[in-house]
Image (tube, rainbow over all chains, first blue to last red; front, side, top):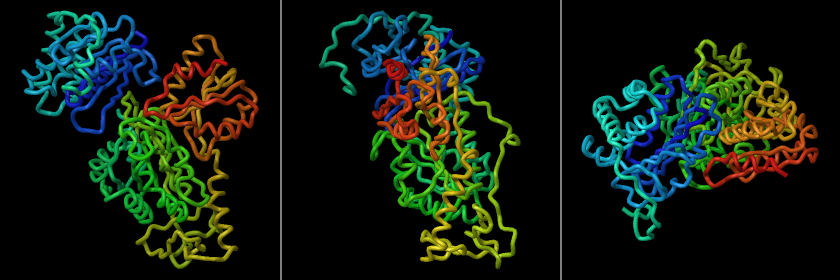
Length: 196
Length: 368
């Protein structure tokens, strides 16, 4: 593995920055080199938000995603913005309820937001659920490293809830996700940026 | 560790005793961390009403004997310019950290830029010397922050640590050196009795000792041209030596102040010149180009001002082309062109839309 790039994109308040931070730390726990950046608007919640994690066995100079090996899109806007900038064999995971309109073939749909609502009462854990699915599908870090990073990084008192969210993510991956969304012509009237 | 966190750790390791600031993205983590850590070890953290008063408080604290710093970004950096000049004129050591974001004006608070390179050099009025440093990795943030404090104390001058959002908000692995391995410089203090002390006495050398207020050494501080005691003067025989000394104390110590790194420049036909976050893109591009068999080298600036002329001059005429990579419309490009003076081709790879330069744009500039 020379350089593996993950882009976790969605809306502010879905826990994507924390998920990226935990993934990067889990990779560091395993002695790999990892680097994480985040990008978000000026507001505290809402608006496009993303984190990017680059994992490598060697030095990482360029700190941003060049061509994502894995794209997680928790909003239609995130998919519209980043869906085309992926590697040829990239894994693309989208949220089953937030993303209605496909852009590329072979995307996998999972109910990340819905699962988060069940566990945490809001979409704040969607990133954490998705992180579990990402790790289960790619094996990029071990469960052990992942849980160590979660314990270290989540606010104290929320460890158990976050552990449950990640485990729900594992299970989603094992169930194989929903039917792949197939690409269809973009409909101008649906799923526009921030149109929810 | 986050870049901004490494800056805070570096400031603490260097002996920071006083911080005053007004939080602003993308520098806020520095204030956030220091607001907790600095008081824990007996230091003072003050949140001020704005950036003008922030730097004023920092200058006051430094005159009181503390190592003092503030952190900000573009809009706040603009407000600090007047007091940067005051610190230059009064020769008060302090560190001003500015994590550049896209601008002008409010710009885009969470997007990177290197648009303030010339502002850091010339933002305050009046001809003056200034030291400006930058960093391109989290580990370097720590090291260069310590250096910023050391140079400020050694040369009795404000030092600007000019970072960008790419580096300030970058998280990567960093091996922190043990504290005892960190070299920390303390400012010279007067040894003579108070009645013999002059804070601007050039007979005491180019960097006269600065006495902390409150220890019996009474002296005057003003932004007006002043005599050796610090009182305003109109006498040319006092003004001219002062002007010369303030420049000389920097310009005769360039070996200590100028820092840069070179990689593969020995056999290079093309050299990429960059700094800060852009240097990450440049180094990536250099490796790709070298992988394709191209003789490409890399010059990374750490000291931005005074401009490391020697590094560029040595390569001028030796290499076919120099490519200056920065997140602005070409600010250091002008300096490189000035020093190269036509002996090599000089081109810029510039981006000023709030995104980091893409390595492909650099690779394209290698052609032709």
